Image (cartoon, rainbow, N blue to C red; front, side, top):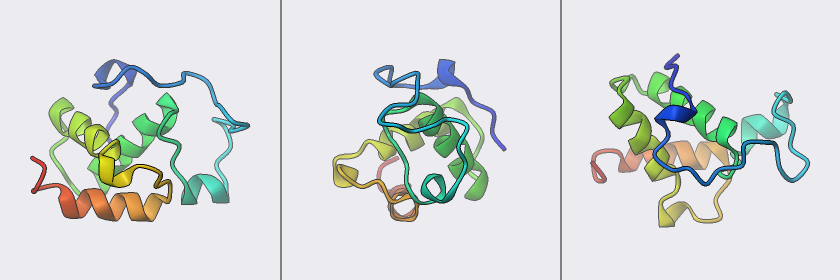
Length: 96
């Protein structure tokens, strides 16, 4: 798995702690289904896993591009992990 960290993020307005009752150590059904785009650890995990899943070059530029697409206007209000993954995968070349 890619191993980018918070120092590699392009945005800096994330919560550094779990918010809304979320638990960063909880890895259960909801974490497999939803993505909290406001939590730093979730965004880092999501971006790293996306790079791994799609065999995208493991560069800081690619990591930040996943992050940027994660916050695209078309995904506003979307928190379903599969929907987000599919949208980013389908949009990858259009938005690069």
